Image (cartoon, rainbow, N blue to C red; front, side, top):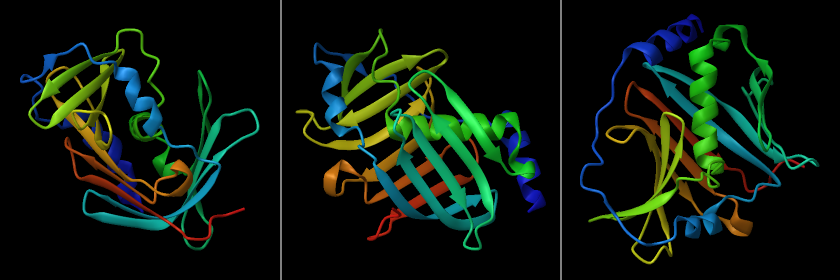
Amino acid sequence: MRYLLFISIVLCCTACSSSYKALQRTEANPSCVKKFKPAFATALYTTQVDVIGKHLSGLLIIKTMPDSSVRIVFSNEAGFKFFDFGFGQDDFKVYYVFDQMDKKAVIKTLRKDFELVLMRHLDAQQSYTAKESQGLYHVFPDGRDIYYYITDGACDSLIRMERGSKRKKVVEAFIQPGADNVPDSIGIRHYNFNFDIQLKRLQRDAQ
């Protein structure tokens, strides 16, 4: 698993491409996407990770804790833990990370990936909605990052999620809705290097 040592280098050195130049601001309310925010209690997913030509697989659990924070733990089939992260209302905690993944760039990328899916930035003060031929882009800035949630024109369905800048897309995510507002599947794809995450919910979640 020494290939994990190279992830941080790739994260820092590669560039991305994609444009938001065609977006035009509208008067639509970006808060309409709040209804799509996943409501995890305890959900267990089979997980496939492909990174720089290598493959990881295992189980990932997403659990909302009594204090309303969200815990995400990924381990392989033998029970070896890769990481254990906590997402609070205003903070992020690393409870555990495998030594070879304990790189600032790796942790930062994973944190932002899951924040995109968990929809953690919907209270951004400078949020707005823009339109494009594919639908509405609900835009939530957070420092240098911008989180985009793309819906149809009526904001009745969530098409995909993206994170990037004003000009370029870095990552996109797709969720397949399931019962109780918990996704049946989640897909995350990076555009600045080869890094894909696929989650498929088990019919019988962990208790």
